[in-house]
Image (cartoon, rainbow over all chains, first blue to last red; front, side, top):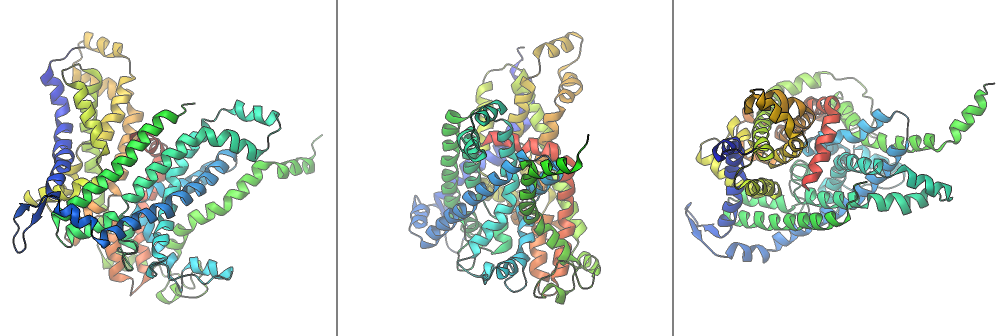
Length: 289
Length: 283
């Protein structure tokens, strides 16, 4: 049905206005700001070329922040994926108290990262928390989690994994339901054991989903902020000062708008690369069973 | 003849039972933080620090809840979150339906360009827009207001994409018949298309509400006074102010502020899960 242009535009207008003013313009404005600096003792912006970027990449603090984000992804994504896969495979196979068990595992998806972090604060308490108590029952003296530069980031990762399990399990369950039963049965008839069937049939069939979850989880960890603001505030010794936390500090505590905008653009590029990898690899490998 | 013993041993040997038993440990671990929160929320300050830790309090200190409500306006925080999340959800649903309808059902020059532009905005992470949007809010003098919490999220590329997909799956003949019957475009949209698309609209509405409810960084920077804080950012500040006095009170406040999320999840689990699965499409 052909429609005259103005009517369609009227329907599109609210969305175009909303996205234009609060997504497209700011994205472009961020680029603009990243090439500008504020003169000391004034609020005037002046063009400073690539100065913010060169300062960024020569700053040990920024490299530490980049390293913290990479480690955060490393501590969070692979373990989270393995635990979720274990849980999803069992959930898929078991017939009893299905709804209750699923609800328990999926519940954290509805809880914000900040609230999830609040649930973990006291579990990490070194002298009265349950985590170190459980460790002590097997003869391990637990660290002072959130105050130890070595253990603060793993602690943040544990709280993040707790929440991410729900998200991962949703996608894995959907993928596992898509694995054709006939394939499993055929393998069973051929005498393949459960591990072999998992390795040779289930795993290849759900590999696109595993890949998808990996990329999305990496993006989520690179955008992580709430749990860090609650648990460690970037410390101790900047060990949890991930990219977004560093950006927040420079933008809203140090008021270095241009410098923080340059960080936003670098973060954008990192996330964009991850998204494009997901699109190109995902397209080629997705099975829609 | 029925042989209960035989049946029972078959039941025990079935792998399905073992699979369930194997799940109980991770389920307990997964549920433990919530249980622990509830436990601490009714403990006295001394009881919190006993070693070895206990789940069941020595004395049940129900007053922690009252004390928490007195220490900070917790209901006001929930109210703020509710206004912001509801506002965002309603505006996003409305704007997305309109745009998706135009893109799915009308032909006009530049349609693909608009579609592409709207989809492209899904790739822009919130952290990139936060500084200019903060500057915009400041220049409009909107800091510390409900507008600042709602207006920047009045459109959703994901919402348009989702509903566009769904609207396209509904047969065109239906609209042609309705128009022949004399129904206008708006009437067709409201009386036929939206009711038919309820599953997609509901999933998006739940997704939009929960995402808005759970926001952290944006409310943190645009709210300034205690009265405007949302539940998510209020809890961290509540903790810093009160953890030295009473952990019981801090966890009581956490329990109060987390309850709506848990109830909402349980009530809308099906829509919620569908919304999350579909959000996967946006990568």
